[in-house]
Image 1 (cartoon, rainbow over the protein chains, first blue to last red):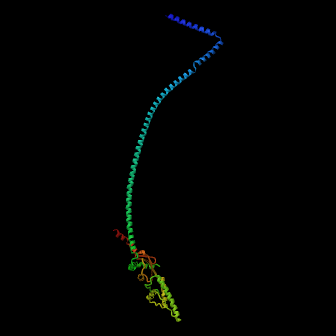
Image 2 (image 1 turned 90 degrees about the vertical axis):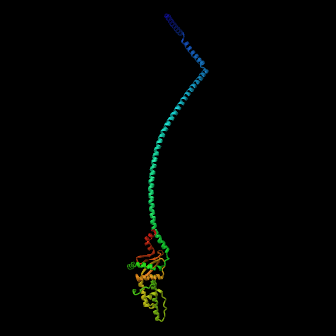
Image 3 (image 1 turned 90 degrees about the horizontal axis):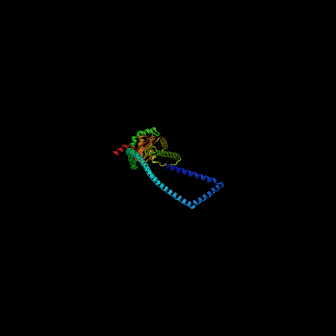
Length: 207
Length: 159
């Protein structure tokens, strides 16, 4: 068996070597001018085949396929992008909600604290003001009471002082010139008698 | 000479004294003229004299037809005008002549015989009078008495 396989492999190797030898002999027999002619022909044939194989229909078909494939890719990507975007938006909404809630909570807490502090300060201030107003009211009441008492006393004194003046004035106005001077003679002479010595002194010392 | 004669109660004011002085001087002129004319046989009619001059002459027993006596009277009146003491009285109303005569009689009897009176009006004093002599003023009015009695009036009013 092994010998059979070995013979087969050697036979194949000999065949291959014979083929290479034939190919080399054939190629060495070709002239350079012919060789160049053959290359150009091959190039032209290749060009012709290219134009023949990749004609406009084929190109259009390729273009359509490419466009469809591209659209498919774009569509798939858009879908993925839309899903990502929705997910991101949802997450972002949740994040924003949480953040806003937290911020608002903090701010409300601060606001409540500030409000409570302001309320305490306002209450304290109101209490102080009320206390001051009460004190002022008490002092003012006392002052007004004193002033009223003083004014009352002053008015009474003025009334009593002026009352005598009023009565005197009334008596003088009522009497006026109604009393006859002849009736007053004794009264006047009595006054003169009372002031007699002073009158004599004035007469003697004056002039 | 002024000590021998005295002023009658009818002569009250300084104006009366001046008027009597002028009248006595005029009478003296008439008497002197009459004396000169009598030598020529001309009779002169004597002028009428005022009641005050008559009273002055009567109270001092001075014959008004005697030029020498009248001359003495004129001299006395001039002396009185210099020496008379004026008592300025203010009354609430115009006093009567009788009132002033009684007043001046008291002044000449009690204060000085050469007292004459000057009268003014001041209705505000109501009753009594205000007397001003030389340098002093004596308020003898009812108003002053009432003011002096103000405390008593207050006591009566407010008790």
